[in-house]
Image (cartoon, rainbow, N blue to C red; front, side, top):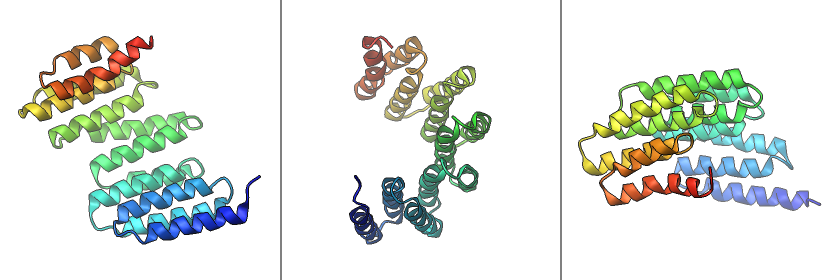
Length: 223
């Protein structure tokens, strides 16, 4: 049996600690975590904490930090307030954070709103296709491709192909190896042969090991 008064005190103590932190993004992330922990026993209090976190997020001046903070908010409210979560995700201006927000919201609402989730993933894919710094471009494409793999395998494969092409064009050897390792890991979920081919093409030993770990482990488990 839950001791609700004690649980409420613990939630308040945790929230007080979070508010004392100087980094606003960390504040937001912790308040969201506390809200999620409180949601089962006291949904009203959880909603208050998320509202507080959103206010902090919107006051952040750095657009990247603000974007990641709002992405955390969007994911937190997606289950109970899908319209609100979609609005928050679409309002993010930083491209990597917006992609993350759209993908996370799509994952939460997908079971009950598959069409809407698919549309959000399409929006994320469109942003990922835009011209941004090469390594970030690869990361954006692999993030969306991984999220799309179950619902639209053909499109996910196309995105991975684009990511691989961009990764192979990176001039810096270390950055190129890391980008290819990321593509290999993303491909491992649906195409082990492709993932291993990419991984074994990496010449830098550390990203090579990173890239091959996931496909090998999956094959050993028979997946």
